[in-house]
Amino acid sequence: MHVKVKLLPVGKKIEDVIIQDGSTGQELLAKLSLAPDAHIITREGNPIPLDDEIKEGERIDIIRIVSGG
Image 1 (tube, rainbow, N blue to C red):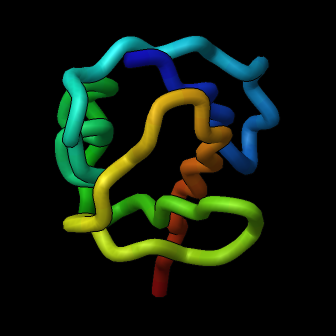
Image 2: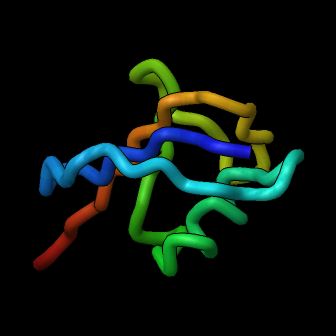
């Protein structure tokens, strides 16, 4: 299935990503080689748990979390 993904805050263009039906947010991050502890997935501006299923045609934003000290 196809989902539209935008990586933030870099504002990278929206990418069409192909994942298996029933894939979760965790699996989407793995497909994109992104660390789950350094990213938040949002759907329509709302954060979603990593175990939420991603549905066909959704627009997903992945926000990179930056911390320091």
